[in-house]
Image (cartoon, rainbow, N blue to C red; front, top):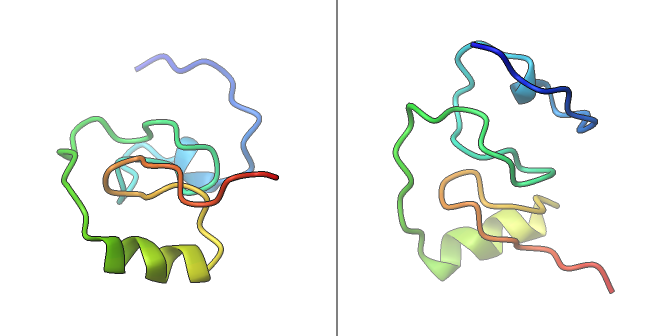
Length: 66
């Protein structure tokens, strides 16, 4: 698999088999083999409080820059 360079510091971009579909920092797909799933707002709220910018399951942007 050939990947283009990514400036995101998250190590999931460098893993051959990342445990999540989307990167929590930039929202890019890091593992296409994992199916995208819908999330509940409660799950997004927990991730948002933890400082996650994008949902690792559905890719939705959780934290918006002001």
